Length: 100
Image (cartoon, rainbow, N blue to C red):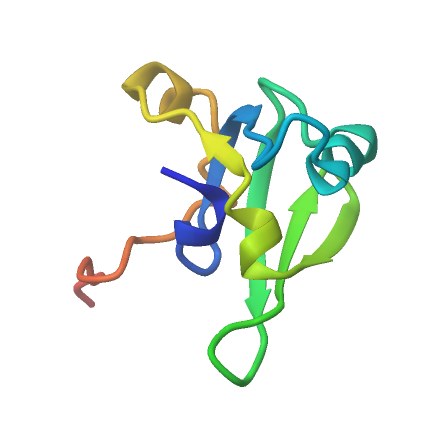
């Protein structure tokens, strides 16, 4: 799964940043900003028109990314990675509802 596919208010753990070209300056910049393997990231907002840009949070820092930029960030898919996430930050996935 890629960061641009993560639903609103859900979090994941970064596996790696995948450059689109060998000298991809955006991928390099994302790594410099802290998008590094093992780092938890949470989607906090989407733009009004087609969800672009999206706002994500790493630690106490928020970043606005275009979906094409967020697509470079590959998320971990394992159950072990999901168990490391803070349950207070994770909400139900689309399709899951809480019963009152």
